[in-house]
Image (tube, rainbow over all chains, first blue to last red; front, top):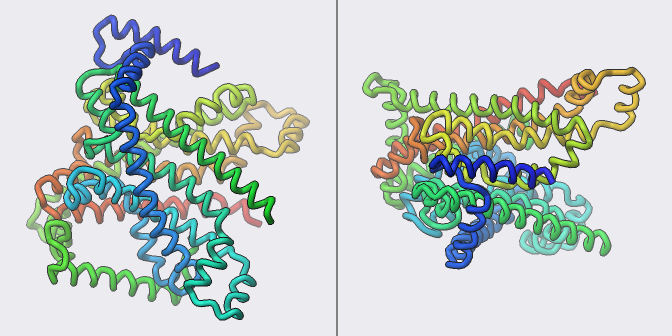
Length: 243
Length: 258
């Protein structure tokens, strides 16, 4: 209800601004038209697929590394103590500070964005996985000792199933971070994807298309986050029912 | 994450030193091209020159660092004030919450930097524009935390306030905000991280003087040591601001612990 009223107010205001020759604003109706145009000529789907695909790949890389590292640090308090200062220092490096470095190393394209998304998702996931492993029932680990399981087996057969539910919570956070970082990289440097499309629309003084992209980025982000939440709830329910 | 006990500091410092040594060996030994990975000495030299330690440089890095930190702090302060104020407005009444919450939930996942193009076309490439986007982007965690904190006030406390005939303002200041304080502080910490990120992105795009612009230009000119000096500085800024806020959080919430 409120968004509808706001949109209507914006429509009227922007129509007047556009009538006065504004390069900054466009009414909602024009943005919807621009959106339809982008959907028809396919640029919308291409850019969306690039951003989502790169974010997913980066999350996969960062998440896999974080899972391995988090289990190692969680199982061995000594390793966690030793790595404390390093992780604390590295995880506070803002991910965007690495954009120029990634540009230098990989040039523009998928690899550069992937590397930054992986870096940005690695640290929060590392901490979450580590915390999850710490909360594994100690008796389970004692049992694995008694059974003489190797470290490898212990990680796969005891720890992973025990932290699965918490992993989904971490995954949801990782998805949100990955999407935000991917769009940010595209806006700042990488000439692909949704962020770049929006930047180009602004630079070519096409406010309708720019607003269309802004709205679409919002919708995609909302849909992805809502989907993750549903999935997490479903997984939690199923695991709760199984236990 | 909890800080390790006394003995742990030595070990973790050693690991960090070992990593720097590895960096030294990798760059000096030529395992990795120096175009990407400058030596630690070169990075240190860039830092020393930029901060004019030896009297040979101009001290640009110091000025850029000041600019970026100032932008981050101003944006963060604005965001915190606005976030708490708007959060109180939304959170104080159940009706406002019901009306506005869906819209807030929609804007929340929107990347702050996605607002940059819009802000550029409205405000132009100005320092005020970057500040506005920093404040806007960093506001959401504080706003949502305030709303959440006010919404979860114990019903019995609200009843007690009604019995005491507290006015709405008194209820908010005496019960609501203290109850929301842990949430707000956690939100403010996240907001500071976002403020730094958006400030850097804003400097990159809008070419405002600062570390963001400095590292982008350094990368374009293949000055890897200057680039690394900038990254090191940004990392230190992030680390210091995070640590300071964690300390402030501990102090401000001391009354909560028995």
